[in-house]
Image (cartoon, rainbow, N blue to C red; front, side, top):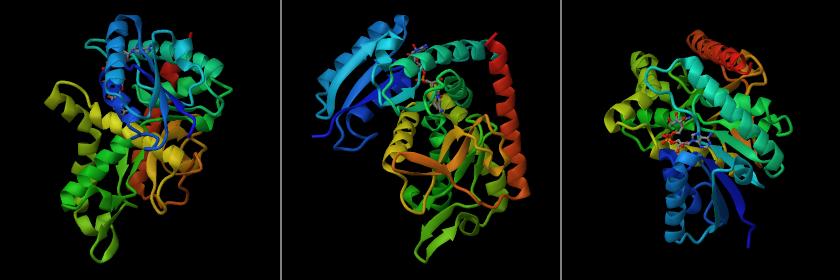
Length: 331
Ligand code: NAX
């Protein structure tokens, strides 16, 4: 039998936490033959709720679940973890300044970076979900210098999946027949959902999405804003932010990273920029990536038109501003 993989979920007593832990325990993240041990971290005010989640995990009698650690001690939570899904963070509350929220998250991510650096298993893979996701991931990277930078990523797969959903809805085809959309940049409303390289499988083979949709006006405006604003639309409808779709996307992100992307298709991941496509190094930016043998690589050589260029640069600019805001919080 395979050795269990230890998966940390921070903010595990929250909404996304509650949706993702059963997915992980059912093998949605690492496959149906991979036993797991769940490490769940939350903060003291949520300790009792966290214990409730622990009790439910036991009650669900998941065959793949070989153990549960539920704690408010970050050092204990990080011990020997192979995968860390960072969902915990400080939410923006009404009337709060951007800088105040950033400052709270900078201190959280600085502390959790140190704990991971000290206690996580070698080659631990990290996925930051909590907002501001790209910049939290960057802080985590800065304060865990011994974790390879390739191991620190943030979630834009939800945006990627939302883009696939919009295209498949528009064409009335199944979502699995659409592929290779791209989310560029920040997980925020400046993100750029790009369909210029996306394809759809039709009865006469694979065709460019642009050709099949045949409505550039829609693709260049409403499609983009719908994906960018989808999070807000969910909040409006549910009075709560996306949780099941976020949890599912986080599982997709880790599964593809660990087990690989299918041949001929790519996904979007927030990763440390190597300067590809003229995006400044030193940012965590969402790129199209393929994954193989547990490693992602940025898809190179895609043609970028002027429309895309401007949008890719605008979202990079926002990340540069977030980075300097985060830096100013460190003093
Ligand atoms: P909740 O408020 O339901 O849960 C957050 C949990 O984190 C709470 O239980 C809280 O006690 C805990 N927490 C706070 N500080 C912590 C710390 N220092 N250590 C450990 N746990 C801590 O929020 P939820 O709806 O689950 O969303 C979680 C995060 O995901 C938010 O930051 C949210 O903005 C972000 N999102 C990111 C998405 C993405 O695609 N990247 C999409 C969904 C989501 O909005």
